[in-house]
Image (cartoon, rainbow, N blue to C red; front, side):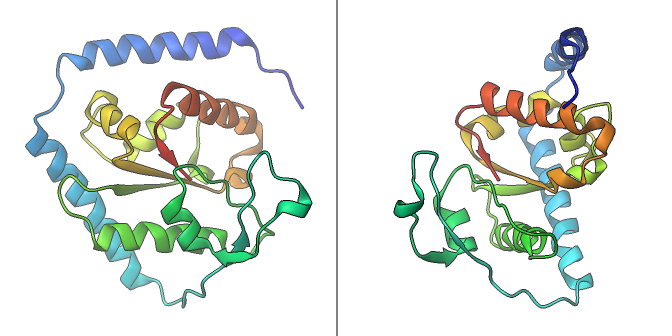
Length: 193
């Protein structure tokens, strides 16, 4: 693996902080934020109609960091696991249906969303760029600032669904990985798949 210069993250973090502080004073009203969320969820639901592929539920074994192979449990429906666990890493072979399963989870939440309920923010890491993960998240919610969604991310009201780490541009893989690590560290109660 390649070593990432520490100054790169420090510089990006300082740039983010200065932008965030400038925009923090301009946090949008809750009604505007809800309007943007509804618009995003409507677009997500509309994508469901474009997809002719039939979803076949995946089954997987739930494994904790502390489990040994002898402790692995029987296979379970992946959507059930995603409903029960606040943080999940879904591993599988290429083409096994991981992305489709995450998409199905996002559509299900979008279809059943009500105000003050958890809603999905589905992100394809294929689109990751040098502007970072937070910018990629906000790209799905045009007009909003990080300060508009930060509390909802930390409280678990937003389910972050990060799809396709292996599809991230190879030259940016380490940066993307590090952004995810920082997100997990900075928002310890966030729900992230």
